[in-house]
Amino acid sequence: MDKSLIRETAEYIYKAQTELFDIPKLTNEKLPNLTFDEAYVIQEEVIKIYEENGHKVLAPKMGLTSKAKWEQMGVDSPCYGYIFESSLEEGDTIKMSDYIHPKVEPEIGIVLKNDIGGSDLTVEDVLANIDYVFSCVEVIDSRYENFNFTLVDVIADNTSAAGAVFSKEKYTDEIDLAAEKVTLKINGEVQEEGDGTAVLGHPAEAIVSLAKLLDEKGQVVKAGQPIMTGGMTGAVLINEGDLVEVTYSNLEAITIKVEA
Ligand code: OOG
Ligand code: MG
Image (cartoon, rainbow, N blue to C red; front, side, top):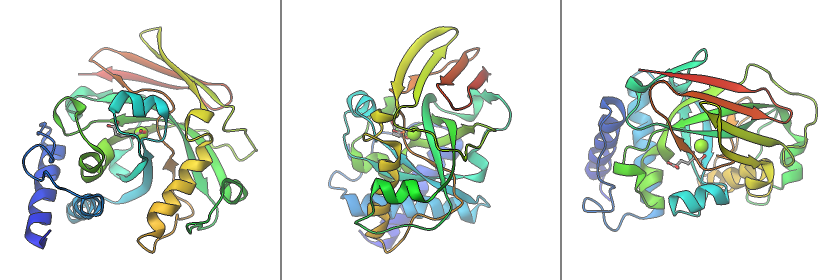
């Protein structure tokens, strides 16, 4: 793919992301033969455009790490994207007007105390290097019509990253993340339930997967970044007026009011 096509495609996605309109997935017509490596190159260019516009990368995030998500989205390979400092929603409200067609998904976040990486990293290595964990709700907002995409499309679109709400609590004591249970309620009704084993068997496995993907680019997973490990359940579309309540067995509950 030549440089001008990469830039043009990244600008197309950036415009959809920031001006809030949906677009057909790239593989429909624009780039039917888009490869995995090209998709990450487009994603990198999208991130670059955000940075040119004053946004600061906060952390990488993993996506499509659970069977619940694979079944819901029809894509069964983990992938990564990035969130920005500006992606973090302050307080306990979000606005529909900031999004195209947002969905929420409960996740577990991990912060490392040391940089770790390599293709032979293990869950034990990750566990030995955790600084703290936290609960989080990702607000995903695919730029593609009806959240319809293939793996390469969603990678180019920065894995539908849009917003996130983090718990205030940071847990430095050991918590069995695989056993951690979560319930997602909307307006008092249970929509989704899951646990940490849903995330590749253990949320730390998402960091292993991230390390492998980054290793191919000669990069490591950095200390200090709040990394979301991927939806533990299917994601749920939200609407104006909704009250989203996510409760965990040990981690802090997160409540979000959806405003206009
Ligand atoms: C892709 C984003 C996936 C997750 O946690 O699985 C993701 C999507 O479902 O739109 O962030
Ligand atoms: Mg997610």
